[in-house]
Amino acid sequence: MEKLHSLSLFVNLLPAELAIVDEMLHERHYIKDEVIFDEGEEGKALYIVADGEVLVCRQGAPDSGRIATLGAGTFFGELALLDDAPRSAQVRAAKNSDLIVFFRDDFVSLLDTHSRIASKVARQLARHIGARMRELALKVGAHQHL
Amino acid sequence: MDQRNESGPIVWSAIIAATCLLLLVFQKLLWLVVPFLMGLILYYILYPAAQYFINRGMSRERAAVWTIVLFLMAMVVVLSFMVPWITTHIVDIQASFELYLGSGLLLLKRSLHALEANWSVFAKAHLAETVASKLQASENSIVEYVEPLVMGIAAWTPSLLLAPFLAFFFLKDGRRFKNFLAHAVPNAFFERTLFLLHEVDQTLHAYFTGLMKLAMLDTVTLAAGLWIVGFPNALALGFICAVLALIPYVGTILGGLVVVLVAATNFPDTPAMAYWAILLFIVARLLDDFVYMPLTIGKSLHMHPLVVVLMIFVGGSVAGVSGLMLALPLLGVVMVVGETISKVVTDPRLMARHRYSKELRRKLASADLL
Image 1 (cartoon, rainbow over the protein chains, first blue to last red):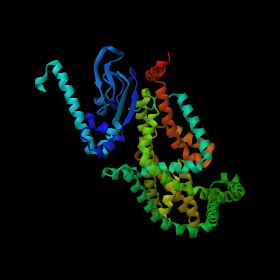
Image 2 (cartoon, one colour):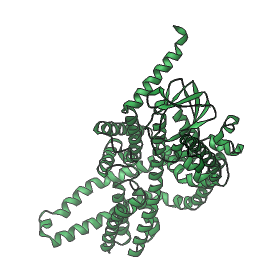
Image 3 (spheres, rainbow over the protein chains, first blue to last red):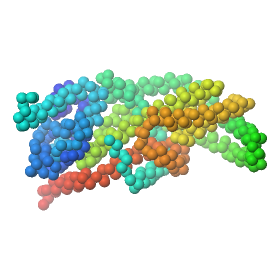
Image 4 (tube, rainbow over the protein chains, first blue to last red):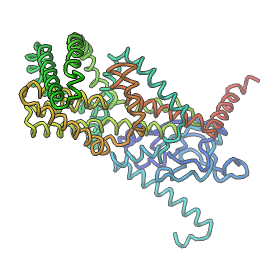
């Protein structure tokens, strides 16, 4: 539970709220170089790196198409919680990693049953997406609009 | 996105074969299958109540306990009214059955004589005489079957008490069970499988709650119709027929037969009542097919109507009455499981990822052995 609380997505949740979310999460172990998902695949879940490191890259190009490396505490595939859009990149385990998987259908049911918890998670999600957009805008020189 | 209309004839043949096989096995395990199915239905019916308690801030465990306790209390209240009535009437069940059957046969005889009187073709064929002699031959055997059937039902009724017990654990640990199942799925198939598991859950939920809503609508319609025509105990009759109608297709005919027998017994000199009852059942059937079913069950099972009808008859021939009852829900579950497996194992990319993952694990496991 402490491990969950330390994750940025759930940092605002109270212990009782964390227990409810904990029931919805799935733990998976990936070994180094294992593919987590492919570019273009329909996204159904958000992944949180609990331990280890993952590599975000262009499809089939872990070396030449490297986009980012994400460590413990970060999450990826967050757009899958919002819509059915295809994955924009391939993700592989850069090291042996433990991932926590949060499915969109569970997030939607959380919105229905525990809107307070869902709003806290959604807020963190929005912050994260905002930060990503700001980062991207800075890269293309449009920071004055953000 | 509907991912269910891509399965080919091989997958469907396997699904139907697996369903038939399971029906054969389940026929031998009815004492367990029936309570399990009832528990599942109860789970889906009680799920909104449990969810209500969870939304009010209760833990899942406590919500499950409260839901089941309230349900059992409601059952105790209902049974306290029903049991005295049943105990006073159970003794003359066979006598009543013979009385209703006799009245039904009398009505049939009169109707056939009326047909002969109005149509010379039937008179020349001695229709009434022929049918009467055939029915006379089978009448005794029908009565002989009734007692063992009633005794058989009474014998496994106690196992139905398992249903609330199972429903409680489905409510309490359903999610844990889902996670347990998901844990066994390899990484490559995990996301797709979990999505399909969710679909199974949604399908079964829609199917079982739809069935209950359909039974309620049928009860109200039939009770109202029977009351207007002038039948006594219209609500009870409507309820019995609506429950029978849960056995697809055959159930409606059985329900109609029950009402015709009641009409023939209670109104022996008014055959018009039986004809009104038949008309009412035809109207109810049409309402079921064109209004109620789309509103309740809809296309929850995503099956072609021809497959549904064929499967019911196959179920009946493979496993008798239990086959009629179990064929559709079982086919629904086998269909989703079969299609899930077929979609996963026929996806070359997922299979390639799975092989790659296995190879990586094999190398890792044997890294220090070289």
